[in-house]
Image 1 (spheres, rainbow, N blue to C red):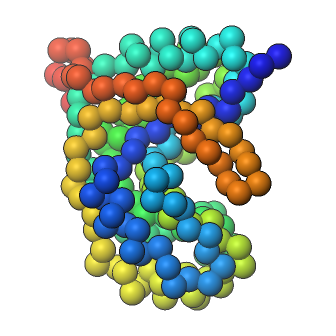
Image 2 (image 1 turned 45 degrees about the horizontal axis):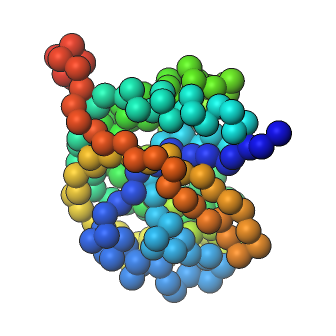
Image 3 (image 1 turned 30 degrees about the horizontal axis):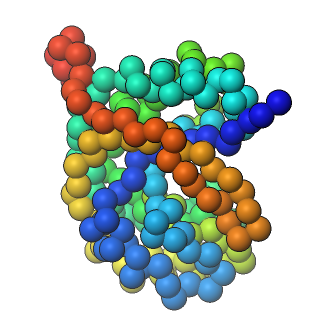
Amino acid sequence: MTTARLFVAIDPPEQVRRQITPLCRDLDGARWTRADQLHVTLRFLGTVDAALVGNVVEGLGAIARSPFSLTAAGFGVFPSFRSPKVLWIGLSPAEGLERLHEAVESSVVRSTTLEPDEKRFSPHLTLARLNGARASSVRAWMERRSNFSAGPWEVDGFFLYASTLTPSGAIHRKLETYRLAGAPAEDRRNR
């Protein structure tokens, strides 16, 4: 059986990547995300039977949402400061992003055999994977950059990616591009 490792994401524009990239240094134990790999994951699908990819593509194409703006600001870690494994920058305002996430989640569940994602959606850009970074060092790194923000930028689309794992890291390839052209009239009234 042929499979594909898939995820749905938003890409920050080049000017936001250029603003974020200089942050990615000066923290022992951090493996920084390459600028071209920065993205906001809306839904990680994991390994999907290749026969279902067409269903995913079609389902995501039916999503109708309006463009919205985002600003990157505020840092955090996953899962906690007791054991920091991922360093991230937050995104706000979250409302438009959360609505798009909900639409993507609903589409993926309808168009595949995947179960709903039980993890709470947490809008962020992953800056680094942390391996042995001390919590105190991470906190100090964050405090030195506490006034940083990038954006706002207009989110006018999202993407379906295939991801291939290699010894030197994941390789992401865009399979489909989806433009946010506007929500149906009844959806706009309920905002």
